[in-house]
Image (cartoon, rainbow over all chains, first blue to last red; front, side):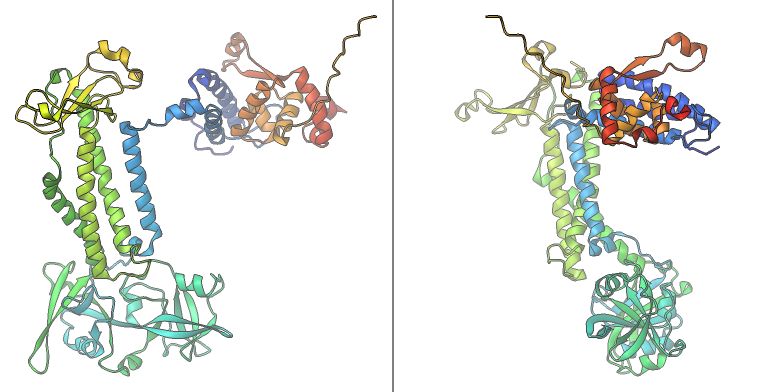
Length: 513
Length: 116
């Protein structure tokens, strides 16, 4: 007997009942009855494992296939009843439409962030297991630099003098090199020449160095996925191909999955630089230094930002910043939290915080209606948070504004700071204003604005705008000029005797009036 | 002058406009598979295809559906089923479809054909 996850009768029936919700109401009972009847036979035959008619072992559609088919049936019925389909969709101005739109925008910004490499890298956590204890060392204030900041002479010196602080130090240097990809075809690639321990520290696949050359005396070359796609046409049999990197023959040992390289500096490919090769470089040539921190040297824990003072032979001292890789990932979110706090502080300066006055007959508003109002506001704010976060990440790190060219880490941070702050501020302002412009009972947007009164008679009668709830729940009066006796908007509830004037009364939820 | 005889419209030849899927379902019902599930089994079509197609065929007057008597189902301790059968128009359509899909009868043979 075949195994089917839905061989349990109650689960299958529940699924069929769920599918029947999609069926237009006039056909629902008929379809559900037929599905249930057929399900009985599907389950029966499934248990037997035999063809009902012939008794032979047959390929029955299992309960799962049958129940999924019920959803297809229901969808087909919906498609052939466009009026019914439109009833399922929320109406414009309804709270469901508002929340759906916000959720849609949040999802769209998230999807965009996942499509833009820069934004994706800024959002996703570091893929390195030791990201908390691995730090990038750079001169003070240059931790965000995308240019190599550390002199090779410093790296050499730290290998001996900084042993109490770091268990291991790795050096790498991205350089543009001409690579002969195929006969008569070359490309300029950014090759990272790194000390061998960098690959171990980041848990990359091993790449043979000059000293560990293969049988043909070739050095290993690890390709990035983007370079593999762009220059090698995504050749699945790329491993083992020999290319020439600036006159040096190298064998491609593999392709590094995208997003695995999260250190500063563009990298199309990686090669190991042996100790003699590193030592042969001029002392002033600059590169990046990655270090594994010794936990005992940092009582507060290795995570975060630390400072290291380096004393020069001439008596001067220089401060170096040690920022853990995990901290680098957290920085965009820290910026976002900061802007969230500042936006909350600045919000009262842009719009009044009260949601409006509801003095008249407020005692008749049921608690469920009031809770629904607050839940709606909370849901809007909750959806705004990811929406603005992902949008600001797209803008700052996705390099949309700079035409997909890297804007530089510092510029990106400023861009994120500004976009996140203004985005949050205006989104919160919109949320409050939107809430004030909705009926407190059915939460739909108020419509039909009408001018009431005259400005010249402001001290005799109110003048301003009147909005109507299409569900017939009431009128909203917004004063044009706030006065001591009419300072904020007021809600005027209508009793059910007015309902005959409104065509959309039945669409509103059960009223409390 | 004798009045002219009324002109009688000759029945137009049925045009086989059904898809192969619909033709399979018609043939399966003709071959004695009178429930949705047995049609699915015989044709190998998924439930999401068979039931909507049968509804279309019923709407077009090619098949008829009828619920089984509750007492029969109760006696067998199962829910009542919905039976399907070909209408006259359905049979004519199937005859026309045999010309368009010559292998239809061999794919789903009727019991008489199997015996022969």
